[in-house]
Structures are given as C-alpha cells and as structure tokens.
Length: 338
Image (cartoon, rainbow, N blue to C red; front, side, top):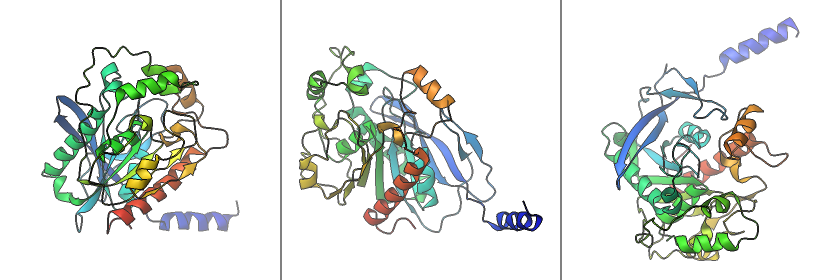
C-alpha cells in the first residue's frame, strides 16, 4: 500500500469514535415455582472493558462488558424483553440486544427452563404457557430492582421473541394455547418439522394442563416484534377483550414449520399487524455461528441452529431485522429510539 494512503487510513481509524460498550448483568428471578437467570443489557459507563463471550461452542462470540457500571442516563429508557426459542439461551438474541441498547433501549433477556439449551424437559415443551409466566416474573423483578428499575420507563415496554418466543408473545397479548390441538396437528402433518418430530416422542400423560386455558396477558407490554413464530395453529384465536395498544410486527421465515403459512386472519382482524416475509431459514434469527466448526458442532448436538439456506448471509439479515425492530419500537413505544 502507498505510504501516504496507509498514513491516511491510520489517521481516519484513529479519528473514528469508539463504539460504546454494552453492559450486561445477571438478574435472578423466582416465580411460579421456577427459578432462572435473566440478563439486563444496558449502556456501560465510559472506560468499561469488554470481553468476547460465547454461550456455546458453535456460537460466534459477541463483545459485552460483564457487570460494568451503567452509563449516567439523562432520562429513563424504554425496555424491550427478548424471549428465546426452543434450545435457545438468554443470549440467543444478543445480536438484537446489542443494537437495541445502542439505539437507546434497555433490554431484558429471559431464560425459559425446560425449553432452553441447559435443560430440556417433557413438561417444558408441553407447558409452554409457563414461558409467559417467566416473562411476567422477570418483568416484576427488574422493575422493582433498586438499580435497574430506576433506569426503566415502565410505560414503554416492548417484546421481541423468536420461535417459541414468538408464541410467548401471542400468549402475553391474550392468546390461549391448546396443547391437545397442537399434538393433533403434529400427528397429522405429513412432513414433520423439527419441533413436531420431537414432541411426538414425548410421553405427556402425567403433565398437568388444567391451567392451559387461562389468560397470561401482561398489559405492561405495549408492542410485540415476532420472529419466525411457531405453534400458531395451537392458538386459533385471541380471546382477550382488550388488545395491545400498538401494532404487531410479525416477520417470519418462509420455511415449513408448525406455524401457518401466513399471519392468522384472527390476528389481522383484531390487531393492526405488519408482516415481513423473508426467504430465510427458521434459525437465521439465532446467533451467528463460528465459520465451519459451528455447523459441525451444532449438527453433532442434533440441533440445526447453524443451518441457513444457500445464499443467506445471517449477519446481514440480523442487521436488517435490527433496523426493522428499532423502527417498529420507535413508532409503537412513543419517544423511544434514535
């Protein structure tokens, strides 16, 4: 490289502003007889040291500042709760959490025992409404926390969910889950997807379901951004008389799954919705994987989290989805975002 061009490049690099660090702190949650860890994502104070972190061997690391002091905020910020899919973790939508924090939000990512990478149980896969309770319990905990609650504008809370997390959004908005209908649908599905293949092997005879028909609507959540939702055939109607105050965004992967091919008509009639159809895979909304070794390790574990259709660039999809989500929450959580 020409010496003068090299010097100019180095000067520009030195002049570029450093990317602000995103802090992350664990929050212990107990509710409904379940204990789990959530994570609070927030802007870190100047000088915070970041580390490259990966929750699982196949996953590409992200830069976080664990337990860093939060930056001084001029005002309370809106909060987005993020819910992972089956086999996910509280870090699965970390790629979105980082961008949301940079755009002016705080983020709370939850763990869902029984459907996460640490613990898979028959009851967890069958009693999906427990995930809704997890979210409400985590919200209770973060809002009353003396440190984090003081930073949150409780009137501006949104939700982002992928796969099972997308169904959790439906439940938190007032939808009801019918586990018997879901299993019946999976039984009749000619070409079983990853989810149906697995749940049909489960013996659910001893799993209690008497509380499945209850409403788990959480009125504190005003807007929902749903990514590749699953299990919508088991939620045939939104029975709540009160709808969320703002619109839904329902991007979904154009892959065969246990969800219907389009957003259910009952949603469109009851809730203003904007649907984005992307020609990508269901797991494209999962974290980026390490090159080559990530796909090998994920395949060995039996979970296709690194699989994308040919030509799909997961990093570019994440960037576009994050822009869409920020735009959506800025419009629905008034005054949010930049």
